[in-house]
Structures are given as structure tokens and as C-alpha cells.
Amino acid sequence: MSKIRVLVTDDSAFMRKVISDILSTDPEIEVIDRAKNGLECIEKCKELAPDVLTLDIEMPVMNGLDALEKLMNECPVPIVMLSSLTKEGAEATIHALELGAFDFVTKPSGPISLDIHKVGDRLIERVKAAAASKARLKKLMPRVVKPVSSESKAAPVTPASPVIRTKIPSPPAVMRSQVGGKARLVVLGTSTGGPKALQSVLTAIPANFPAPIAIVQHMPAGFTKSLANRLDSLCQIRVTEVVDGEYLENGTAYIAPGGFHFEVRQVNGRLQAYLHQEEPRGGHRPSVDILFESVSQLTNVDKWAIIMTGMGNDGTKGLKLMKELGHVTSIIEDESSCVVYGMPRAAIQAGLADNVAPLEKIPELLCKLLH
Image 1 (cartoon, rainbow, N blue to C red):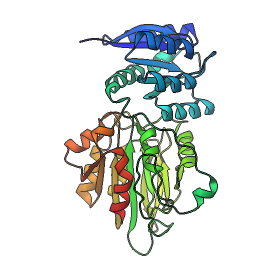
Image 2: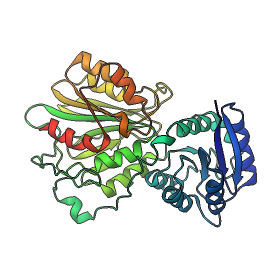
Image 3: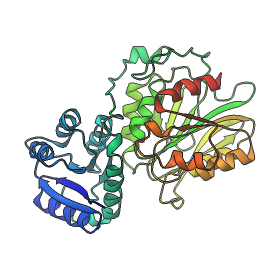
Image 4: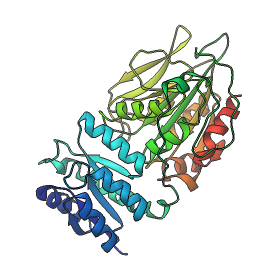
């Protein structure tokens, strides 16, 4: 079996060596070369055709974002970004994922992280997953979407997606999640590849969508706020990082903050967010299973559950409990559009899929089901 050939790119000679040493501890990975900036990275990528490359964001001559954009246009390759934990770093990372980066790993203590070994296992895991996704890369290349204006965002419209051409009739605008009868709630879980998948789905949802959408996206603390802000600028619905205790309203997507589990509870007949920092579940905090399990306890609520691209099986146990304790309609992303077909595969193999659809069809299907 051939090894995964990796090109390491960082402006720091120390970081290039340490990252290379970490990757080389795995017998399935071979570091074939190193580059000190984005321009050199592009040149070596064209010459060596690596299976995966790691790419720092902050570099001289050509930064990681500029290099990423050129690589995706000229010689697409799975890319794992190395990101800082600053606000600027988080925003740049979200943009990198939008441009086509496979995933990212955070440097624990800034551009020169002497403790980079703390994320060594995650880096190796992401490089291996990126290599496995190589065959899907060109097919799944995302289109960058420009933010909608504040004027157009305020008006109820039919969804305009870069992928879906069929316009979906807008349901009546009702902003409370509980109106005279059953409440409605959509729950969604995703992981690797999720930011791009969320953009594809949420930008195609009409402003007056008749339910709140509770979302768990596996992502470290400090990054979900930037993700929510970016999606909010692109979508007709409101997208926000959820706040503990807030009531969930229709036409709004609520993203669990990194480092916190997100549950939904009923308070005085209304749906309310509850955040906590209990132990990670399956290595994840937030956990899709914990969100879904909390929703399984809700009564007099119509429920829809979506599981999209991601590694592992988070969400399967929670969806199973939702089905055991009440009625829920599930939508599982089809393998053809998944960046990583882990979480969807687990749900399908468990017999929990009511609907299986490629990413571009999920918004239209969801709106039809809610009608």
C-alpha cells in the first residue's frame, strides 16, 4: 500500500520541521517536501503532485488564503489548514473552508506553537481523511457566494441557491416556534465538510421558513461565531451562534458554540436553548447525539432531523432515540455529495434514513416536507 504523500507549508522553519516530524510518526504518511510560503507551495505542488498538503494561513510573499484559491483553480488538492485561535484567524479559516480547504487544525499557542504536539493526533487524522477525499475533490468544489444585502435579507423571498434552480414557494411568515398548535423544529448535525455543506443548504432556505433550525457543527471554541456571522451574511434566514436561555424562533438557524453542548428544552410551551459543558461525547463538544437526544424528549413538537457530511457516527444514537420516543422525519445526505461519508453512512446503515438526498436537493426536500 502506497503512503500518503504530504507537502508541508509554513513560513517558520521550526514549524515546518515539527509538523513534518509529527506526520512522519505515522507509517502511512510520507512528508515529501516543505515550502516556506504560498508561492513556493504552489510551485512544489505542481511539480510533486502531493496527495495532501498542510497550509499555514499567515505567511509572507503569498499567504495561505491566496495560495489556496490559486491551488483550487489550477491544481486542486486536499488541503488541511493550520489556523490560529485569534478572531482574525477564525475568520480566515472560515473563508478557507469556503474556498475549498478540506478541514483545519488549530495551532494551540499562536503562529509559533511550541506545543503543536498537543494536536498531533488530530493533524494526522485530518491528513488521512483528506487523502481519502481526494477522488471527490473536483466534483465537490464549492462556489463562493457573495453576501446578500440587508435590504434583500429583510424581505421574504423564495430561496436562491447557487446549486438549486427550482424556486420553492415561501410558506406564510410566522416567527414564533409555537403558534396555537404543535411547535416545529429542525435539527441538523454535521462535521468535516460541514461549513461548505451548511452554506449550500442554508442559503437556499427562504426568509420566512416556518421552523427554527438547531445545528451542531463540530468545530472548536472561537470558530463557530465566525461561521455563524459568515452564514448570516449569505442567507435569507437569520443565522446566529446560539445563546444559553434564548427562545428559538422560526426563520432562524442556531449554531452550537464550540466547546458547549446544545440542548433544546420546553419552557412555558416554547422551545428554549440550554448550553452546558459536560464531558465530550465521542470526543465531541458540541455533540450531535446530545442535541438529538434532548429533542427526543420534547412533546407536541413536529420534528425533522438532518445528518450531513462528517467523520464518525455522531448523530446516529440520538436519531435512533428520537425515532423510538416519537415521530421524526429524517433526511440523510447521499454519499455522492459528502466530503466524508461517515456520519451519513452510520445513520443509513442503522436503518434510520427516511430520505436520502444529495446536498443540493436537501433544502427543497426539507421545505416540501414542512408543507
